[in-house]
Length: 399
Image 1 (cartoon, helix red, strand yellow):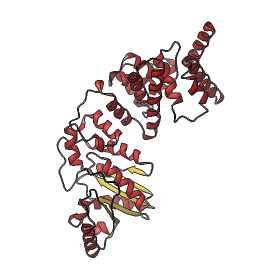
Image 2 (cartoon, helix red, strand yellow; image 1 turned 90 degrees about the horizontal axis):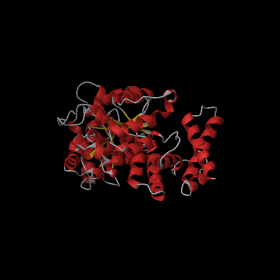
Image 3 (cartoon, helix red, strand yellow; image 1 turned 30 degrees about the horizontal axis):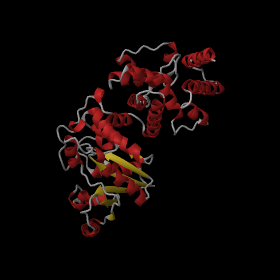
Image 4 (tube, helix red, strand yellow; image 1 turned 180 degrees about the horizontal axis):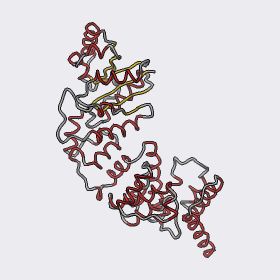
C-alpha cells in the first residue's frame, strides 16, 4: 500500500494545504494519506495566542473529511511528548506499516532546507520525499539542484510536483488576513465556521447575531461532511417553500441550517446538552434516542445562536411533526424530507404537492413515514400519529 504523510502546524489548515494534498494523492496514486498536525514544531515557536492542539486537530479533521475517505487525521505528534521530529514520526509509522511504501509530502521551503533537518539521511532511508511547489516563484531550477544534492549525499528517493492549481497563501499571511477581517476565501467553509465558533485568530463574533453567510459556515462546521449536501439542500428547499407560502426566507434558511446541528453527537453528549439547558424529556422522547438531535439541536439553536422561538420550535419538531404545526414548522419538516439529495423512496408526488397544498404534503409525508416504520416493525412515535390524525381531522372538517 502507498501511504502519504503530510505534517505541519496547520495553523490554520487552508485551501493551499488541501489542494496540495488532493493533487499529491492523485499524482502519486496514494491509497491513503495521513494528515499529522505538529505538536511542538522544532523549527519555530507557536504564538502564545495560537489555537490549542485540540482546536488545530479539529480544523484538520474538518478539512480531511472534505478531502474524502482516504484521508485520515493522525494525532500521534500531539500525543507524543517533546518536540515533533519527523524521524520519530516516521519510526512510529514504519512500525505500524512495516510493508507499506511511505511518501513524505512537503512544501518548497521545507524541501529546500531538508538537509538541515534532524537526521536527514535516516529520514531519506525510510520514505520517498515528495515536494510540491506552492507559488509561481517555485522553479524547476531550484528543485533540480536540491534533488541532485539529496540523492548524492543521502541516497534519497525524491519526487517533485508542480501543482496545477496554486493557492498562493501561507498560514502566517493567512492569519494576518484573518485579523484584518479578510482571508475567508482561503479556507474551507467548515474550517472557517469552526474558527468563528471558537473565536480564533481575533475573529470574535457574537454567535447570536451572525449574518446568514457566517451562520452557514458555522453550521457546516458542526456536521459530518457527508451530511453537508443534505443540510444545504434543506436550506434551499426551505427558502423556496417560504417564498411560496409567504414566510420569511431568511428565517427559513436559519432554521434549516441549524436543524441538524447536533446530529453527529452521541446519546451522552445529547444528555449533557439537556442537563445544561434544563431540557426535560417526556417518556416518549426519553426512550427514543433517534429523536435527541431535534431536541438538543433546538436547545443549542436557542441558547448558543439566539434564534427566535419560531425557529427553535421548527427545529424541535422537524423529525416527528406534531399536531397543529405552524407554517414554518411544516416548511422545515417538509424541506428536511424532500430536499434534492433525498433518495430513500420516490418523492416525486410529495415534492410537487409541497408547492400546491402544504397540509396535504405534510399528511402524505407523515403517512409515508408511519407506514415505513410499521413495515420495519419499528415503534411509531406518538407525536407523528397525532400530527397525522390532526391533519386528517382538519381535512375532514374542510371537506
